[in-house]
Image 1 (cartoon, rainbow, N blue to C red):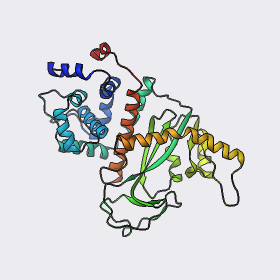
Image 2: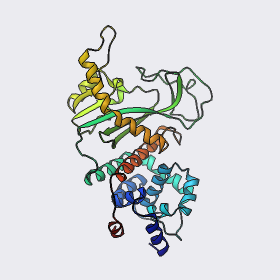
Image 3: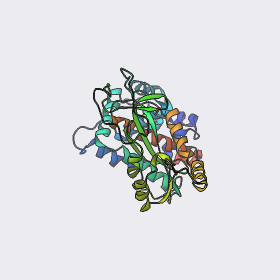
Image 4: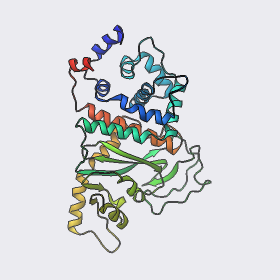
Length: 335
């Protein structure tokens, strides 16, 4: 680090969120995941360090920057330079480099692995529990980056079974996005599923077209959970899901009334107790949409939208972790 950036680091201080995140993470652990995603052998001409580009993508997600704005910000923002490890007189990755790097990781399918590595390190630091008491599952709608060309009658949200694909009905610039109707509003886009612990750390994400029902995705969302109980709302209430859950954890799916069979008083109390513990997942959606731009997809296609969801989850986890820790100036200098 040159003298200018050292002075900048002193001015920024140790209470900055990015400074905390940079000191908290062991970044070299992400190297093998990135190399696998890029499918690089290590031979031939070498470009930018993948870790630098990954940090740049994280900055872009954190601050809602397009690739051109990210390139510009990396040239003028001292805190961004420090976080990404860019010297004042070093070359800055251009917008095309950011785009190609992100696309390569999407094709490599490593975004879930990057999220898992973040969770592993937070667990090692004791900021996230390995075996939480409860895992909370829910989904939210993410509007497509494409502007719909016409309004159509869309299937209602959570309608079962799924509405069959019809290219004439669902045609748009985004080939994977689908219509869904929630209340009186129709939305073209995707459904983002997340699984959190009771503190709000996200450890699993999943993306489907918006017209997919939530209940069929339950089995995918409970894979790998070490929680004692899985909490979910009435959208997941089915006999099949309760059977799937038996071998994983205790049943925390809210009870759902059926025609001719209203809920008993004990079931209403159960639903109230579950509702009081499910607010964490709603907070996660609020943070990811308000701070990290998840209210709308930034790119076309389900794979790229899933990458955006994973990066938003990583950003949310790192922000939550940064708010929990305090770095002393002496420890920061040593790092």
